[in-house]
Length: 113
Image (cartoon, rainbow, N blue to C red):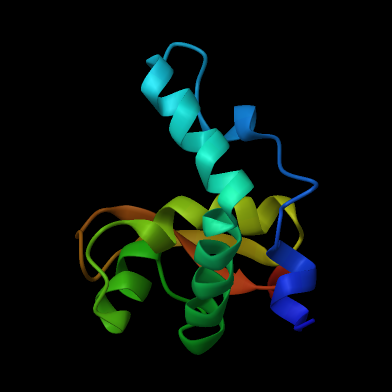
């Protein structure tokens, strides 16, 4: 079993309810359940962590831009990684992609792996 499988596969510590809001439609609730139970969430989190390690000290939009990702899949998983202690935020600055103030992300807690 790989390290990523140990960290993310099956996501026993992730409650699908944390992936969506109560006011979202039933289809969002079903999608959250599906992501957890099929392992898709784990794969997406592993990919987001890989990209965060490759591009530390950048905003979510800058990470996605550098990786050629445009569907938000990294941005959407950074807070999940933060909850697991695998990512951290160290301040904010103007994002080179969005031109707005944005959080700066690092792998590990407090910017340490």
